[in-house]
Image 1 (cartoon, rainbow, N blue to C red):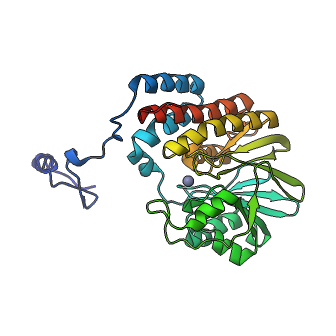
Image 2: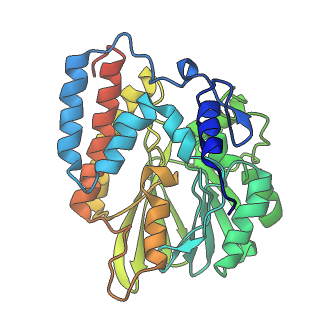
Image 3: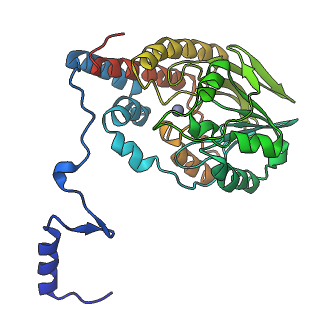
Length: 341
Ligand SMILES: [Zn+2]
């Protein structure tokens, strides 16, 4: 470490007050140009307050981060999402006896191992990520991509189907999506969401209430519109050190993006709540790490002491509150747009 004379500190302070200062070699923006919260000129503030109050009551302390993300940070301070939801490598992690997290920092991918092969949920952004991140993550966990039998696309946004065509071609796995989201993918690129991505060859269309059985494992699927018109959500069993649990994997925790999506999501989440309650869902996973503190939970899991609970097992009551928070945040967002349910 070099010695800095006092005069040098004074000069450095003067320099840092200049508007042309640099941060890490890049010119810093003038403060007047800093990103601002989303403009909400039509907001019905009384209704926003009412639904935010309901959401925070549902959240309590254990789901505060989930409520804050969906109700506040993502819709009002999107720059904060971009700050943490960037493309990056994460440590692949076995999260249950049969479920493996093999995605990246910005978007998740999970492998479900059955007695007759592997089922992959989502394929990351593109072929490069599938090849360079997803496959090596699988291999690091002892999973052979050649054993992939099905690839489930939870919804038709490019960050979930981007690697599907390459994986379909290289492994021969069947690709599953809802008919509605197959159509959405095939309608073509949507600027700002995904572009110039090769589509997987049109394959299996999963119906609402349909099942997929591979070996000893059956997944039940439901179409839960909101995030996209044909978002697929899944319910399936896993074990944690032999203890049985039921996973609720909602494919649309990114929420509605416009009025139609928000309106569609409210009854869809209500129905998802009933379905997951009836199925005894007690495990929460999502298809973006940011939507369920996935990276933090995986870090804890990899460092769990004997007897420490699996952080993905939230319990049936908490799971239901999580789902109700998603719907309540949609109501908050409609109120911000000056609309009501
Ligand atoms: Zn999406």
